[in-house]
Image (cartoon, rainbow, N blue to C red; front, top):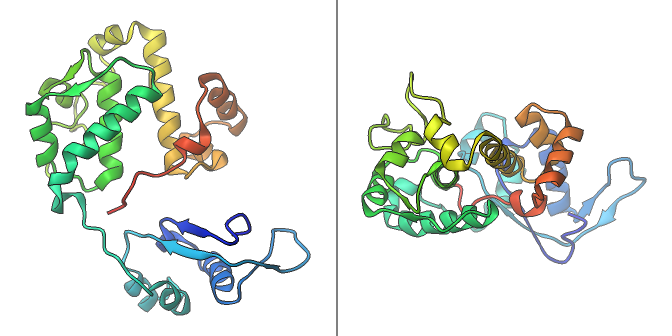
Length: 249
């Protein structure tokens, strides 16, 4: 809030915020004051707050899991973002955006989605919305063996039309390992394949943790110092990879 003074701040997944943290946000909005951890006094701030959640805040407020006063403060101009399944026409553009972003981040040659594969992606359920789509596209870019990503690549990545409804991007029980011999060979051997896989996991961990390295380390179940070393060794931009995909559905 202090850094956003005079501007705007975006609070994602505010429905998951603890009641204690909600009280601090309410004070910042209502009183225009914050207090640093370990600080000695209040700091005045003037911040416009934008918030997003995939939960029903009104229901949480009724259940006592979200503060009524904060809910009414935030619910000034509510906007509903439809889930991806209700706007399938957006999927091709999103796929191509994530395709190019992932290709550049991993320093890989150009990739394209074959029309048949794009049709499958458009028809999937996507319960995880844009975030799930981004993860699947990243997996496809890393595991695909040629310039064109086809239905066979989707099947290897667990994102084919044969996946159970509502579970897009999740390999079915008994599926083959994520990296088979063909994928390892396509990546140039075990070392490059492991490197690409680690980079993808670290980037996803940072996105899930909104750029918080300590939280990403916890999610990835590795030591924070070790994660820092890997981030530096791979040249991963924490700030860039900590940003979330547009829309939360």
